[in-house]
Image: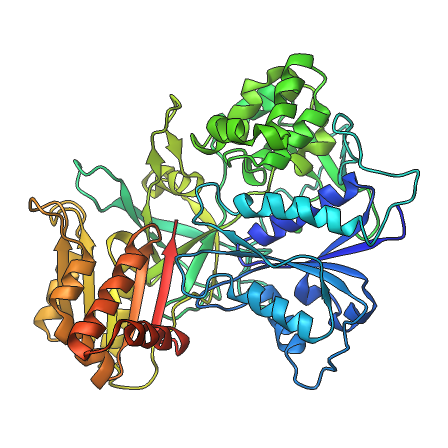
Length: 590
């Protein structure tokens, strides 16, 4: 490796920023660059003054907050006493991951970029703003940005003459080697460690609690188009604690049929055991992966074969292919000129890693096992709002594209398949702070807009507030039909009868003209304005990120103009002030 040292530091809440950082590392290795990847809070931040070249990859969470694993770094880097020349020897670039349905889109990346400039750093590129809402996901922005990044990196930091970009047909070294064992080990750490007995703290991703599933109940009508489940877990003795607005994370698994199909197409023995060893010093194995481990468990619990592959997947697959026709097509998909064809083949129909491997069987059958963790991303935990106690409301994701087989969400379908009535079921889970925080001052009203499963976090909040004697609770709930997907109807009506809740409903399919929550907001504009402007109410929004958040924001802006007499710019400024002071908070998902 040349002397050029590339450091990639990431702040990641759900794992996406870490995945992108690993992609950067792979691309650096292909260019014969030494590269280290670390979470921001695990890196000694005082050493930044000695780093010549740093790429920061950071997500924005909640209402514009840094991820948990970069909060210590965040506090340090914004110290007022840091000299303005602290980072004058550092070249840097910032890659942000966010969701444009949130007001503070990529706020962390933008603010970090400005701060690094203030401390004397030299920016190689403008900040990259990856967007989950783009049709092609964050890669739509990341791909061209990375192309420009490598041009910049190899300009001021040239490679030695005898080194260069590894040719497309030659695979770069794998990050790990799989050392297969001749015998099944007598003591094998195949079982997940159970939290709750660990004195070091509450359950976490590295040590989840194996929670018994108590009930798994469909709560939509039998003729409704979507299967929505209310699932309850027993967390007795777990050490789990939470408040309204917190979220639960669960670690899903691939289906048995997908595991079998994957092993068949790659020619793997699911019962074979192995140990994982890094090729380079300083590289750590995935923390959750037990040593030794079986192929069966690796594929079932770790490799996300149901994910939609990225361009870098096809690039490496082309390098590994020894079948001329398949390799030619894979090279086309991985080239800059073949991106539209790749979108038509893979991105738009949501073709999975497993389906692509089945489409290229000669290539798949010759993949060296050492490359499995370079090729396929790890299964990331899924996040759900807590409805109450430890209950979650899960919409089972199934939809049709032009492919014959319906698309299925990995975690929601896995959860729906579990039946505690047929025997004990345990799900690895843990809890963390969510994006919604509710007012602690007494008598502060709250307005909650939660269409569909977006109502889940508000159930926990309303129950908590009612128990504390708070009655200023206004809920706007929307669904298709009251007899099919009106979640917790009896509970809401009982609270309304007690004077603890003002319930406003929008049933979009029960009349010729569709009615949504934003229409109900406009109809009750005087109530909304009075609560916000006269009584200091907090406003919350949860649900699908596609259209609804923008429609609700437009409805609020109209209310501010019509009821408050504000001009257009003043209404927009009023909304921005609510967001800045956390009196308007959102939690949305794609």
